[in-house]
Each structure stands twice: as structure tokens, then as C-alpha cells.
Length: 454
Image (cartoon, rainbow, N blue to C red; front, side, top):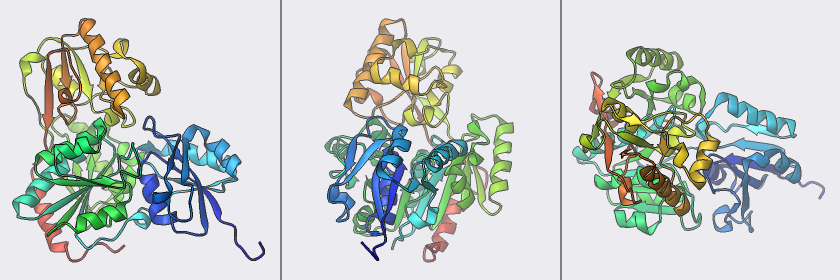
């Protein structure tokens, strides 16, 4: 029609989390934009569904299709899209630019929204725990901070980065205060790994899809003093932080300047925590310090260990073992090993490569990530994949493997049957030297009433 400006036909590239948040904050009520599709990457079985109309809003009465990212160029052409928005994390700068080149060649702009554009303002002070790469140690850092704050008599509401892999409408706002809530919401292994340790320590965790509604729910809790943003992958916070902590992993030195949006987190951080200094090479630790200081000259730098303990060393020592590691860390996180591998090697165990025993979706994971080391990623995105993980370990038991070392943050044996002796590796954060974590949190207390500008 004459005088009517056509809406900008837009595709949002995502992985069932940041993509939905960016849509909700930037585009849901924007009459100048028409989001014609989401694309999905990294996580199995999250494509070929729809972002439902009850979440998408009145501009999208039929919802929005979610398509595999490998169809990006065809989608741009089919929908005459002129804008692609990058909205997922833990990808190399090179990978981001390959996507940009695909979009540009197909005729679309490629957009990276500024981190603060998608941050919601809160009434409550926010401590954000983020990272340069997934698997750097955000979870144990978040748990340590929550313990310190609770010890000071503060009521902490933990809001976790989204992992909505099921019914999106039902997952709009989720509250986890007990293990019964984990069962109620039928969470995946990946979700359980993040929520269960917090719940075990007495924290209430919020997550879901609509982080404006989640914020309203968390701030309506009686006497909430602090929101603790527990980030996912190496994504930036969804809320304006009063204190922004970024965790960096010296086992992957150099990655702090090579991955999106981890470098953004390093540059934005008020405090940078160099974790795992007890298991990384000293030279790598010092190089990591130099790298982050080159990106951020003003952040306070802390050094921390994540000491590894095992509940029964005799199960592992000297045996032929399979190391089960955190799935995201050793897949798109790019780590070839994790806590289970380190403990197995310390105890003179022989690591058995699980690939010959892998079935179905677990075999597909090895095919998708050929650089994986001789570890078994604890993939559990849905019941079928959990059963495939169980079957893989059953094959290993029949194939001469003597024990299993579990390096995930949860008691995996509660979820699957493991027909082998098994031992669980645990890890918590221990800051070394000064400043200490309580020192940094005391500075946060002095800034509570003056959060960063939005």
C-alpha cells in the first residue's frame, strides 16, 4: 500500500535460548520487523517446531517456524529475508563470519545486537556470572557466590540462562525449589546438571523462555536481596549487572579472544576469575592473565582452583575405565577432556575410547564432533538420548570396560542404569590469594544502589 513501510523480513539464528530472548526484547512488539523464522544449531532435536503464538505475541498469530541452520541460505531466499540476527553463543569468531558471509551472499544483512541492548533493567541488584567459554567453571563460581551471600543473611534468587528444549509454552516461566520440581518439568540431563546442585544447597532457581516474566516472578519472591545471573555457554547477561564476573579457563588459553561472545564478556567484566589453576600448566595460567589484561585493563583479576575429589578411588585406580564428561563442555565447548579424565589419569587408570560402544544419537554426537577425545559426553537432550547413553555404557560393560568415572555435576547413576562399578568426581571453587571472592562481593555491596546504566 502507498505510504506503508514494509516490515523488515528477519531470520534469527539461535540454539533455543538467546534467540528467543532477543526476539522477546527487540522484535516481539516491533511493527517494523517481521521475524519469518528462527534457525537452530548446537542442540539436538530443537528444530522443526514452532515458537508458539502465545509467546510470540499478536503480530505472530501462527507462531514462528524453527528451522535447521543448515537451511539458512534457502530460508533467506524463500522468505525474501533481508536481515539475519546472530543470537547464540560459544562459536569462534571465524564461524560467526562464515555465517555472515552466507547471509550476505544470499542477500541479507548480518546483525550482532549490542550486549546492553538486550539486557533488562531490574529493581534488584544483579551479580552476573559469565564466561569466556562453556565449561570454564561458572557453575561452581555461582554456587560459591550464593553460599557467601546466604552466609551474610541475604536472600538470593538464581536466574539461569535458558535451556528450553521441550514444550516452549509450558516452559515460559519455571521455578525449581526441589528435586520434585525437576521431575515435574521433565528436565534434560543438561538442565539437571545446572539446577540440581543449586537446589541441593537450598537455592531457588528460575529459568524458562520469557525472561521479562521470569524477572517479575523472581522479584515477587519475599525479601529477595540479590539476583544471581547464572550464565550459559559464554553468553552475555540478560539483565543489567551491578557486578559482572567473567570466568576464564587456562586449559584453553587464547580462547578468551577467539570466541563469541566470550570476548565481549571479558571486555565488559568488572572481575575476571582465572579458574582451574591447580590443573592447568603454570605458563598457560600466566599467558591467560596477560591475554585478559590486554582486553580489559580495569577488571579485578582473581585466581581460583577447582579441586577434584572422587567418592571412591578404589573403583578407578589401575582399571580400564570410561570417562563420562559434561556434554556441552566437550562438544561445542571444544574441550577434549574434563574432570573425569584428569582423575582417571591421576589414579593410573587406562582410558578406554567409548566410540566402539556408542549407539544411535551418541554415535551421531561423535560424528558431529570428530575432535572429541576418548571420553563419553553425557548427552541427555530428551529421553531417547538418555536411553542411548545408558545403552552405550551397557555395551562398554560387555566389552571389557571395568569401571566408569562420572565427571558431570550430578549423580548420573540416579538417572540411568550403569552396569559397572562407578565413581563420581566433584569440584567446587577455591579462590587463591587476594583479592578473595568475599572481597569482590563486599565491593558489590557498596555498589548495590548504583547499578550500571542500561
